Amino acid sequence: MSKKGKWVMGVLAAVLVTAGFASPALAAAAATTPDWAPMVAKIIMGLSLSLGLTGSAVGLSISFSALLGGGPENFYKNIAVAMMPGSQGIYSIVVFFTNMDQFNTDPYTVAGRAGIFGITMFLSAWYQGVVCAAGIRSIQEGRNTMANALVSGAMPETYAVFALVMTFIMK
Image (cartoon, rainbow, N blue to C red; front, side):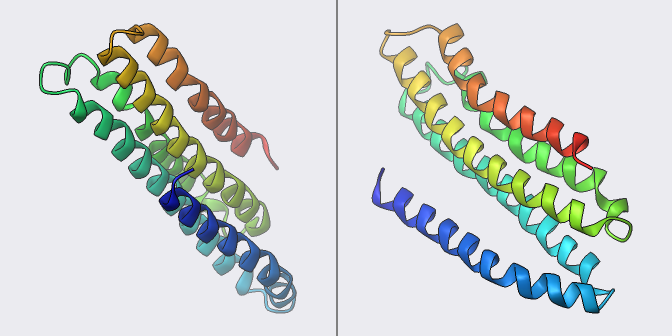
């Protein structure tokens, strides 16, 4: 993993550790103050949306870097593979809008859904960008086909879809 990747993963780990230490305090405060729970759920949902959109941006920048490295003659041939990491941002927006009416009725479930979903979208989009970039490069070097690159790029997408489905199943 590159220095940049280690740095980003370190920051993500620090945020998760901080959230882990802060969650008992927030839960205790939410239990005594009824107005805190929807606010905490909204904050976590906002972070989840941000993580999903950020993951898509990172994944798209990685895959488009590989696409642009192939020159103008290969741009339109491989653009479908490069666009794949953008779907996690769309899934994050869908989860945000489908849970907006539940902040006051079931804030803890919304917060749980959002927290797990945001991390999953961030990581799956990022690594989908890496896989798609490798697929684009192998196509440009003549070692692979478009179908193989699309199937390889669809594997991280599968787990993003599983996370999306689980947010609707969780109660």
